[in-house]
Length: 127
Image 1: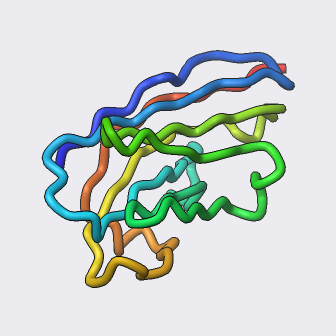
Image 2: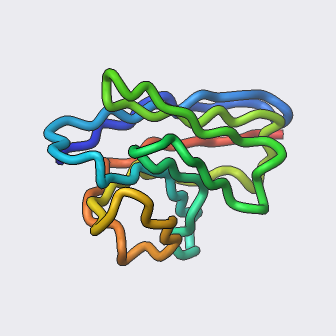
């Protein structure tokens, strides 16, 4: 699976951005796609994910009132709509994917459980 993420940029506090990530080479519906972020000097952390089988989504508590994950299943693409952006949202955002052992497997927020990674797209929020 190859992942191509795009949509990052520079935005002012309170603004919005929409990230996209297109997957190529997916061969099973036992599949999750998601977003992680990594700020300078910090560890990579979970942001949001979607389960391909039924579209179930998960969003980190810290951003769930501002960020929304969605998908275009026909084109193997996910989106991260980020609203009311804050300076602390500044980070490199990575798209990730993994195959799972069952259709209904619940989310893993652990970085090491995700096998495929995109190149990252920078989001910078300025005051």
